[in-house]
Image (cartoon, rainbow, N blue to C red):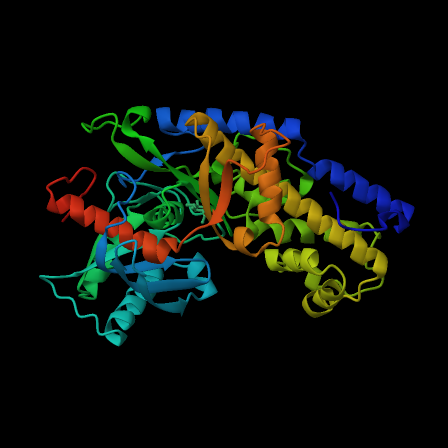
Length: 470
Ligand code: BGC
């Protein structure tokens, strides 16, 4: 349902355009179910064999934490804006975890530069953190590190990760197809850092494990942010493609990498704006689902629609639209603020960000467009999670979610809950939703530390399944 009043006051030409756009962006309950069922097929395919759309990567995180994991760990997270480095001290689930952190601004050019430049930046930041926090560490007793690397990586071991493809606008030479963990080790050795990489971790797995450390109801870790993806706990016996001696009932966290759902473009209701985003992206044809639902793209879809309407002489007549022509200028925050405070905030947003004096009619149109785009995104975001739940016969629990869309968009969670009910056919008169979205605990600080602790504990007990160790 739209919160925008008085759309019928739009001029007839613009109203027709808007109605056509609403139709293109609508995901009906029937379409939602169709997508979710196709999703389930692709999840199963990914478990059965290699080389599928959704790659269902094994992670060698063998089960949920007990809540009793303890110790101090170095963690680091390569995000789109910063490298976050933490010294995390776990004291068991009943005591507060201590996280000392520093963020190192990642210069934009590094995201499309060379691997050497990236590793130099990372190891310089790590060295600086270790020095400023006086963490010590020696060659004999190195500091254990959990590295959150939120890109698709095939993990033959927990301390290994062959980058499949860059996503989210990263495009660094010399890393795709390579083991990122080995590259990090080499770079740390070159600098003589007293650090031992224990685990390479996807952000979804970190979110799931950090949340499960305190919340036993956790069933899935999901990121609805710049990118989109989820992780859940499966069993070795269900992963047909995995060759291992582990007993079939051994739990194994799976990093789905479902941003690549429907790369074959069978069911997703793509608009010409989605096609344009894909065409102009560094990796056309990839991450089809992510490009329609994740935060990196929502503002861009909005911008492309406005450009289209402007070019056809329908809006912003006589205005300087040079800012509007800048790709990726508008982030999801721009859309969020429109839904938060439709009119006053939007007007000044347009002035400040786009240098456009917006009319009342254009304001109403923009507000409705922001709703339409965000609503489609939120509804699509239920397809992957509902498919996991159906595949694993999960009927209740907590989906621990992180990311800017989940946390900052004012209506995401409500729309997501509504669509989950539709796709999983929950009774209309239910009192509570059986599967709810919760705010994930700190995946790359706490989650990465818990995973490092679990891994070291296993090694100590002589269980080195999926551990390369050097
Ligand atoms: C990456 C995933 C990641 C997700 C959320 C996607 O682009 O491929 O590995 O989990 O973004 O950050």
